[in-house]
Length: 182
Image (cartoon, rainbow, N blue to C red; front, side, top):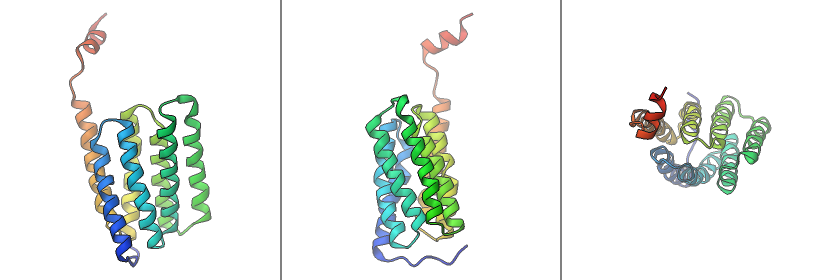
């Protein structure tokens, strides 16, 4: 673990408020609700990371919030998905420009995965890919001793539970007929 990053009251408050959104979003079913909650959390995380001097993470979250705003504005129009993917490329370039070593690599890997997930219009695929970025953010937040690490872990648990719940949900009768018909 790296030396803990000194954290003032403002950084703590922003981090703690962001944690509520990080913990809550996976519990919801609709893509737009999940994106809206993530937007609020990322806005607070920009402040949290900026206040403690973790520049790459602040920039990744600012670009992530921008991507969410674009995704919410564009809805599920597949012809415009390239904009979300383009922002993922911008994230990699921004990481190089703000490089701080391992923490930058973890923040970038996590946010690029999350960014690719957000572009998905299928809610289950969205959830799987966004959750795949979670372990990178968890490692990042543990390295800088941020309290947000607790929310990263809970978000993963809640998200995996939501995926399991979806997989265990009974198939609708019409779908059963389609599957069982010759």
